[in-house]
Image (cartoon, rainbow, N blue to C red; front, side, top):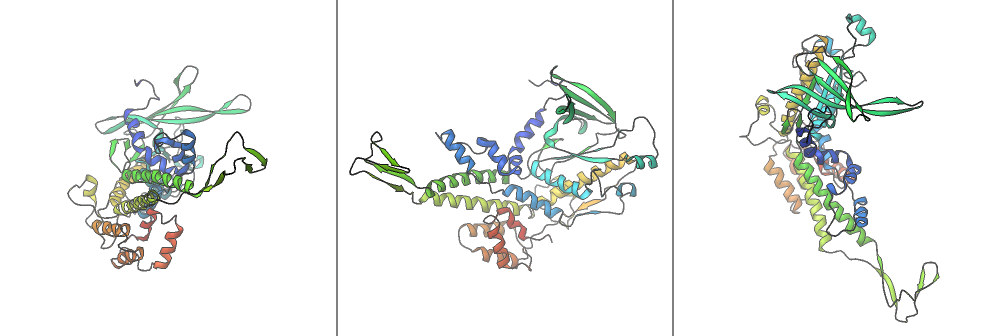
Length: 464
């Protein structure tokens, strides 16, 4: 049962979020994270011994199409950077080169936020300013003391929950840690929870002996009409604070590849490593006369290496892996293609008719709302109004290639009807591939990139 009076309790929508994004989070962590997840995404085979399973898990390899696609899509959106109009107030513009106070520019914050939201379902950023007590400082004094607003990105894993009424976020609880002195020469990390509300915050510290959290410190914000946090949720929302993976289907395809590749690696290992078979040997009468030599008193005894020859299972496994890789590549490319009409969302309606109505362009539009809201918050801390003046590229056309045609090309590849070079030339002829690309160079890059990393294929296409 949830104790709603416990400041550190995990809300129900946070638990739903953790479960929904688990595949994406593990894939973003790469092969070490997938192996650490163990049987969560790689279940043991029927009656598979623990030692055998651990050996199979250790020999499994990850082709990370999910992570590569997230990176490539982020690259598409920020290939041209982002545009800041002349409406940006100078008081805010001066901080664009160091938005965090630690040297990270607005473009770095934007890129990280988009990649986080696309890969993990939500990105969270907070605007804060150093506390100055009750003293009223001039702008000159603030500049001399380095007192200024700053942006802090928050891992959504640390957002424990919040209170929302009539669509307005009234409270957000964020888990933190603090390093404190321990004894004469040591330090330890203490769990903290920050409660953020309009105009104020409270920090609670875990008291391990008492088994509860106690108030540590409090403070105020100059922004009193809202919590100073912005949320970027490009996929389906679980709540105003959490969202599901926008690329969930790709994540599950990648998990299928992980399992299939594990089976293939395992069977190939047993095929490549011969084992010893013997007959006529009595284990009780075996005499070890010299190192690595075994004799038998039985005249007809035989011993030799046995190798397993390839079979239909090996070929079927390889075809399954290749099919999944092509489906992963197709999925990534489809996000750049115009979506079928009839299911327009509120976001789609704000996109102008000159822009491509693709999934990626819609997510980019959602991101514009987020980054402009964040900069609006930043301006509130400075006491200036900041209009929506930041835009990102939202046009990722693929020439005259439709979803149906792209699917046909990949099906032709899968069925060995068309060669890879012929598909490349067809895409180039239709304007989906840069005319300056040469097949020999592209082919060599594909071979070098992990047997043609599926997400990497989308790198052929230029933003138009």
